[in-house]
Image (cartoon, rainbow, N blue to C red; front, side):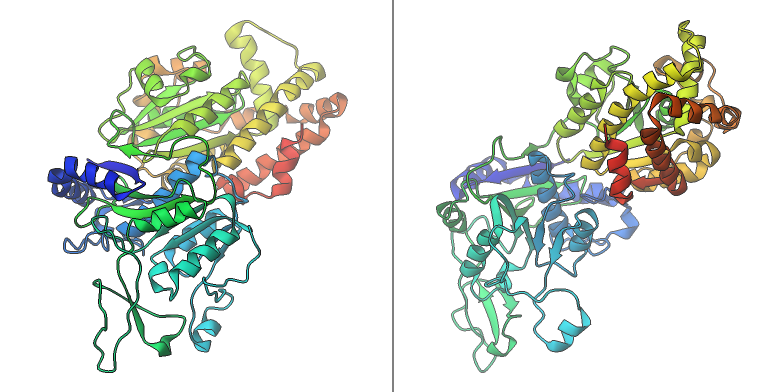
Length: 561
């Protein structure tokens, strides 16, 4: 099934690729449609899985359909290209990105606004009634925005530029307000087989189009009284004009995806303009051509040691679609940062990434460098793989008490339960926790409460399923009957005598919690330990939550080292 993300800088490159692949275009498109009809698709950015019964397909207008919840194939392709570009730049998790988009009322805009707080969505609102109805959506003329120079990191638009009376003026204005090195991502009617420029024509008094040069018809929202506008399909010369203006790497990117339900009529995918506002950034433009042997979904889990990661990973190991890898670096399955890539991990773990499989990888901060390895594993995973990161949060006192207890039981490294051991635990844990919170912030990670998982496993599993995109299976709630213990690393008890999910250990350790408050006061770690407790309390109250939904002041306190 096709997964294609291919940039073309000029028509000659497209012609060459089309000459080699045109006989397969119909089969590519059909395989996308068949996959969507059988299993649905996954939305970019949100990772929401849309089931076949939620999707409308019009075979006569493929790119305008494969629709669900206000997103069609064309809009999902646009979002997918944006996601690929942000990921390639390391910007996908940057919540401080300033994004300008004439998309204020669309579902695509709502998706991005939910992820990026500094999102300015605008609309052409011709009438006073519309401007009142949609207040406070800004009414903005893209030909003269009135915005300061270099004030946005990203410009994003879907099928807007063909409505602008003077597209050349609009493009110049967009380049002005986007920062040097910023990103421009835009879709509009585009025929890759033609070499034409943007032109306009007016309806005459009888309603007929004068000087019609293309079959695309669009209204004029800026000046409705002036009639309507007809544009030729913008051609490849637009890229040369972009490059002449300083956008060195301007390209039309074709995207087709069975996983995300993106296909088109004629060519197999939709086309999206991508340009860097200035010299080309370091590294190649993202591209995919039918990658094989990789999982459909990559889920990662990090936490301090003794936070319950082995139990949570076991719940995924018994799922029919998941392959679980327990602590690949701590178990010495992988060695260092060079092994932090999916092909090597799959090969060394003996896991197949094909056939729509999901991969679940957990690691703890037993060695702080492991957090950086997980970061690298996530960063190098290519689209269309869905990525997610979870940070498991256990009550700090219980995490410490459990580590002291297990060191004696499992490793013969019995240590005293005293203030000095608590101080040593705080010293190593605070740096590791700061690194994990920072990683979760850049990856839009989930914070998950261990206690809520132990107390309400069925509810929490279903909430996780909605958040990262899978169907809960009954075996997960009785994992101890189905677990392959030979693959378990981490908690020795889970690996040797797996027991039903319960909150027994929580209740047992509560009696000794008061000791940690005394230890904290004696060790000088009271402020950090209080911040950690406050983080835990917030995560426990939510059960699970996006890290970005937690108060910044709380995250900053925990990260202070």
